[in-house]
Length: 546
Image (cartoon, rainbow, N blue to C red; front, side, top):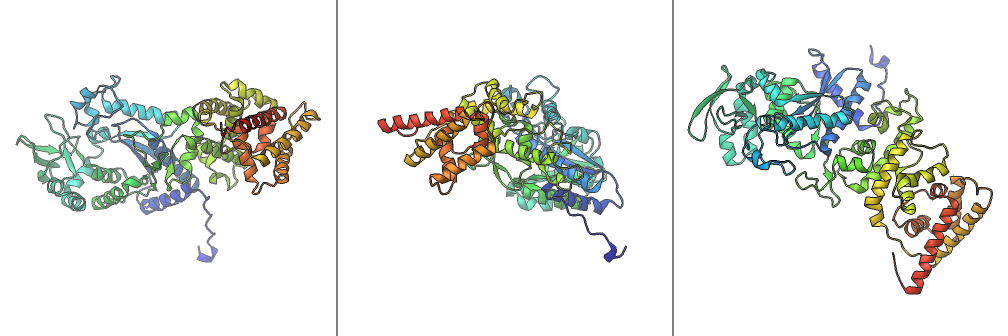
C-alpha cells in the first residue's frame, strides 16, 4: 500500500492506559516475528508482609493497561501476579504473631519458614493465600506464580545457566553501585546452604558454567559446590528481576518511582542475558496527610480495609486511576472526592453507546472492565449524603432514606443498590470524620440579613403549591443565587461559603438547591432559623464559633 493510500491512524482514546498499551504494542511488535505468544504483563509481590493498598494499585493499573491493549490490538494477554517467596526473611514484621519463632528462621527463604499464623505449610504460603484472596475479592483476572515453584520446578534453569555464562558482566554492572565491602564479595548468585537452609550472600570461589554450579565457602570454612538449578540457589534481587524478565519473556511491568535506578540496572542485565527488558510505567508514590511518603512500617497512610469501610471499591479504583505519575495524598479526606468522581464518570458512561469512541476514555469503562451496568451509578452524590447526614445528625441509614424517599419516592435499596451502599458508608464516614470536625461560624450583619431573606422566600414556597411535594432543585438554586446577588456578595462563592459554614458547620458543601430539595424546604427554613437564633444568642453573650 502506498503512503498516500495508507489510512490515517486511529487516534488513541485520551486515557493513560491507552498510552501505555501503545508502548506495550510496540514492544510486542519487536518480537512478534518469531514469537506470537500472548503479551505477558507482570506484577510483583513480596510475601514477607500482607497485601496492601499499593498491591491493589499496581494490579489494578496493570489490568487497565491490559484492557486497553486488548481494545487497541485485539490480541490476547496474560497477567502474572508473581510472588517472590524464595526471598530470605530479613526482619520480623510487626503485624504478625509468633515473632520469637520467626526470629529463629531469619535468613531462610519465606517458603521454608513455618507459618506464624498456624494455618498453612509456610509463612509464604499463608501470605500467598492472602494475596490470592485479596485479588479475587476485587475480581482481578490473573495467574498466580510462586518464585519457589519456578526455581525448584526448573522453569528458570536455562536462564540460571545463562547467568553463569555472563556472571562477570553482570557483576560489572552492579559493582559500581555498591560500597567497598559488598563490592568485594558480590555475586548475583545466592546459594542455599544445604545444611542450614539459609540464603547465602558470599563470594563465589569458582563459577562452572558448563556444569551449572558455583563453589563457595561458608563462615565455618566449609567449601560447597552448589548447582544453581532446581532450587539450589536463587538470584540477588536486581539480577533476579532481570533473569525473570528474560526467562519468561515479560512484556510489561510497572514500578514505583523509588525503583527507577533498579529498573535501569535490571534492564542492562536483561540485555546482557540476551533479552529485552519490558515496557513499563513509573508511577509516583503516595503521600500522607502531611505530604510525607507513605511507609508500611510507619503506618502513616490508609489501608484498603480502612478505605472500604468508608466508600465502595469503585471509589478506590477511581483514586488509583487518576494521574498515576503524579504524587497524591492518600488519607481519609480524599475518599469523598474519589467517590463522587467515580459517580460522575459512571453517569457520563451510562449515556454513551458501546461503540462511542468516548467510552473507552472514561475511567468507569476501565473500573467495570468494559461492562458498565445500570447499577453502577447513583442519583445522589456521596458528598450530598454526607451533608444530609450532617444536618440530620444521622446515626442510621433509615434517617437518610426518609429524606431520600421524599426527594424521590421510587428510590429504594433494591432499585438503587449503589445509592444503598453509599448511604451505609456515609453514616460511618460522618460519625468518624464529619461530626467531630463540625464548627459553626457566626454570620455577620450582611449574612444574617441574607439568611433571613432566604428563609422568608423559602417559607413562601413551603406555604405555596409545593408544600405537598419537593420544589424543583433548579428553582431553588436560582433562588439562592438571587438572594446572594441581592445582598451584594461578590464573588458569589462567598455567599455559598456562608451557607456551608453557618448552616452546615463545614468549609465546603453541596449544590444548595439540590440540598434544599432533598432536606426539605420547611426543614431548611428551620435550619436557617436555628442558625440565626444561635447568632442572636452569641451576639448577646459575645461568643464566637461553636
